[in-house]
Length: 253
Image (cartoon, rainbow, N blue to C red; front, side, top):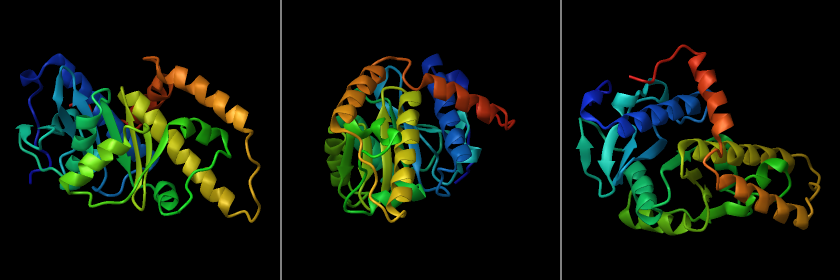
């Protein structure tokens, strides 16, 4: 596989090129945050005006190497639609299954972070014990471990993702979805933070202070209204873009 294979932007619509740049930036942001697992996690985005097509990393390319033109365009049936590329079979299964089941979703993020995987292996996952977890608690769902590269697993994950937009994959890791890339990123940031706080709390040898159920419910109602706006996650996204730009990297190529 040629990991530097590039697609010609002149052969794409403006909408596709724009979303390629955003997704490539997302990979660089995840690299900045330390959310990589060598080459073995994946992020994707649906192609505008092409509901059965999405973009994903060329398998084998590090997050820090990904550019807009190196992303692979694939349809929800697994056929590569543009340029050379290699798909991670488990990656396609996860993302393809979700896009089939959730036409409202335009971005899917999957990570194997240590705090996320640490919580994923526990019988009892996240508890409403921190402000961080309240950002995702009302939309939190759990998905039982299956065979990641099997078609049946993709279908099962699609069902689980109909229960919530922030998912703990049992014995595996974390997954978030969003109508936008910034929305999916904000969910992942808060979900991962919630897992970090949960792990710290479990190691302190004392029961955590619970948050009043009424406060939990009201927080959920308020954050749900925020998520429904197109600006959800945008302030954090712009800040993250400034961070990766400060590194002198160029993903817009």
